[in-house]
Image (cartoon, rainbow, N blue to C red; front, side, top):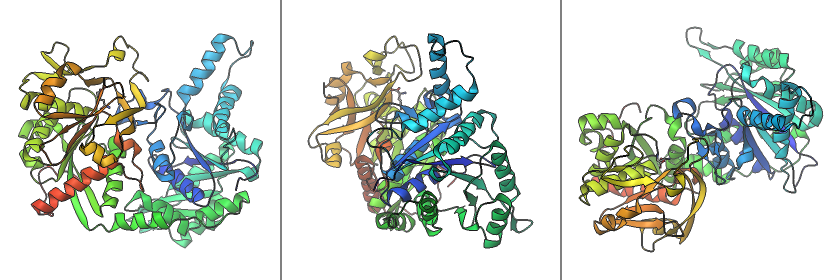
Length: 554
Ligand code: GLN
């Protein structure tokens, strides 16, 4: 039932960053979608980079690649997973993009002599990007706009000004402002503190925005008394002061919101009448995630093991696959540098599988290769993603195909056996931003392979983000030694999947399957990898509670 015009919900954050605005925005999106409304989410990022593609994961966490090849903020991963809806370029806007557009126009002379200014030119461009989502025949009922950063950041001001103006232009009945804050519990005083919330709302009001809903991040549900106090100081009805308490799985957030009638409050505000949200499947998913029957331990060997946001989608894909097998997938984070120093045995002897994620640069590669050798020879399930797959090919070339000096051209130019080399269309590329092989491409699967068995299809479409590939000059030597090339690009020129036959589950993929896994539709390769790990675990009956050297901070 289409609403008369698109409604806009603006989600801002205050007090501190990393409170989970993206999850809150995605959770609300899910509730509205499950009420039968059509929803689009958009993330406005105030940084000057055109996209996060050139940013270090330490700065920004994972880069979430979409089907259309755009490199976006990791919150778009939450949007895709919660709404089960693929995002596109228009769902993530950065200050860098806004300025790029405006300066290009200015150089062309489009402004006809005018002085180009933040207000109105930057704000108009921001608003037009948001409204673009509400254009066309498939106009959504609701657009949820998440503003990155925290209220009070200098760089966020043009975005806040733009959304303030939209309130005026769209009409109060068509916009809603939601503010996410931290309500800290001070142990020594034995109470929740509302002052940071009051200050944050005050700051928003100074800009001209009065929030209608406050989402209070807190360790435990905020008491009625505290909600009343917040209500009084911030001019928000007590019912609209909603607790966003810590939960064991992020997929529980929509259910907690639902318990507090968050979606009812939104629909009442907009005068939208729908039925109740259909949440049976979601509730079942959360129950399965919260009380799994089994538990497997999967080693994750990478460079950014202390920074979980760098591997967000992989962690989520594990959750989805685990739920399908009634199994908790427990990642064991291992620094590849530690493996290099001490060898793989102390770290990998008790795990049920190994996953090597994507990455860039040579640091840590030696440890990854040693880890892969260990699990290949001991027949422990292995899943290699992008750089992880390339490392698996290097390892196989060296230790099974007799190419002792095999390595990747990414790390060394003067190589005897560059089994991984630069893709032909990357030669001569000098600009780094947005120039990798990005986005969705088809891949044909060989019948009888593990990949084919997992997908149950001959052709699949997966998302990519890489410059290097398996060197076709080594195909014969590798396959003769037992490496199977089970997924190829339709023209046959690009190796997309490798497998080792004489092994329970050894699969490496050039693409990023984690980006397409959804809670109710786990990615087939993750699903089968977890199944193989569970099988291995049950066969080994490994003692579960013994902490090992590799278990660093779980
Ligand atoms: N650095 C490798 C390449 O560019 C792998 C990239 C990745 O893991 N995303 O091919």
